[in-house]
Amino acid sequence: MSKSMRINLKPGERIFLNGAVVRVDRKVTLELMNDVSFLLESHVLQVEDTTTPLRQLYFAVQAMLIDPRNAQAAYGLFREQIGALQAVVETPEILEGLEQVQILVARERLYDALRQLRCLFPLEDAILTKEAAPARASTPRAPRATVLESTL
Image 1 (tube, rainbow, N blue to C red):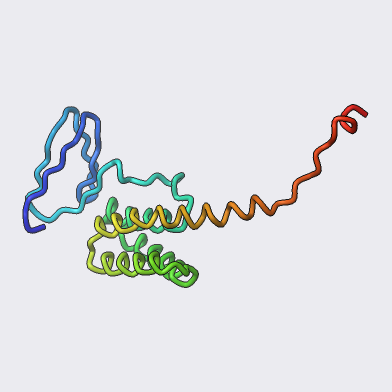
Image 2: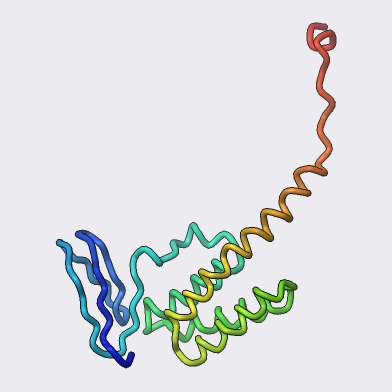
């Protein structure tokens, strides 16, 4: 971080700074004057929200950022997941994004890696929605009973 960064927080909001959780009781502005790993509460993905492969990858990177003491274990999970994704994903935009994420993680720019992954979520959602739609449409439906049949 070459210059300072200001972060505005609302009352009760939390921020994760270098593995520590800080909650503020009033509206404040934090000025980060040197290199620091941080994550805003609004960017934290909960376990129950890791419902897609990219969100699971996001969670692994998030774990590296939030809990530096266990970052090695999270990094191992990240390597497994990104390798599996790169082996099956066919969408060029997502593959390029995953390459960027891999570079950012290697450079320990975890916040930027999370930002890159968040940009890929809409692409993943569109693919998953498109794949789910034909599956629903091709599911055979039971024939509807006619009025006469339903009264018998």
